Length: 167
Image (cartoon, rainbow, N blue to C red):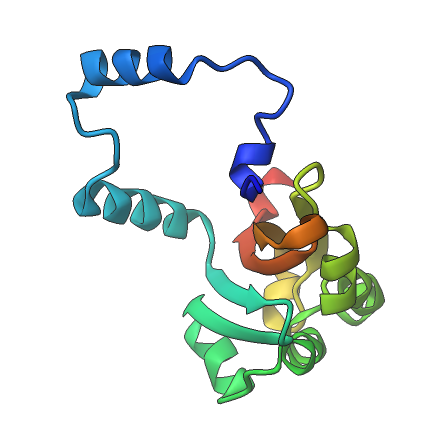
């Protein structure tokens, strides 16, 4: 069975030997990223998102990777993803946007919609409170990380990005 990333290339001719030769010509014989390179990639991506969570869709749990201090204070030791999303919406999502946020950002939606051909679900919302007065807009996205048999999503990465300047 192909993994999620492998399935993205199904249907496209890909000469793996040719790709390896091109990689060796450009980067040297080692085809895998070094720990330093992976750290650079993760670090640069984390600057795009102010919050990142690893979500286990099988068990409805989550683990923070990066989060704002005030979000961590509100969520506390909560590990249930459904409960955490509801708490988050109550404290940080503008009341007019809460229903749409919870419609998209919930474990059932992620389980139903995330597939290799649709690897992301996203919603944009206004921030609640003082930041809303400044025009604070956020895009929350859940991206498929791993799928099991029959393409059933097992894990996702939830990220939140400030998009105020883009609006």
